[in-house]
Image (cartoon, rainbow, N blue to C red):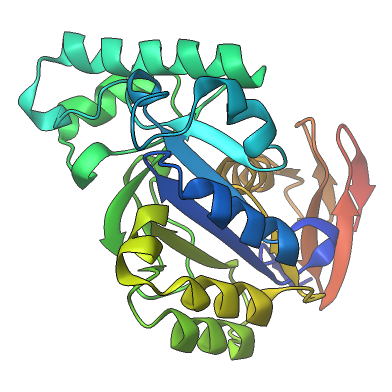
Length: 265
């Protein structure tokens, strides 16, 4: 029996997620573009800057990012490798508390301010219950990270975005989960006067049957649920102990394993 973990929800073969930092007023236009084309992603906010120029207001967070994910970017955007671990913990926890009070759901994701971190930072985030944190590194591939707390993106949006998107659409490597992960800051589109770049990309990527359009935390939770599956010694029986359905590839066919279900393959 040939079993592969290479399928996303509904048996889709690819996933796309976006990741944008800082929460400046230009997020309003970016969210509008995402919503227009059915693209979904995560917005990492500093709660300490909300309401200050040029950042969005706290009162609009819940409605603006509805259908997307709001995530931690620390309260005041410090260099996390240059402050005590106690201060790292405070920056993360206070940002979580403030943002969770606005959106009404638990926040377990993050991106590193300035992209900097060290081993102490990672250990602190693990202790605080953070499940992932995006770096500013890019691998130009479509793979799932080994460690979600040092999560590199596929590319920054200024790094051959359209060409990479075309390569992703044509990418047919079998046997592994295929994820395109784009990051950036919305103010960069305004600064470079190239809003057409993200509009063209979203138009090109939209409404594809094979793509799951997800937030960062949805990708993390799905992959963890997939890895939590329990198989019999012969590999012909599988149990899903998690609270969500997952899909696996069995002899070339998509098989759904529902929450709490035992399936004879």
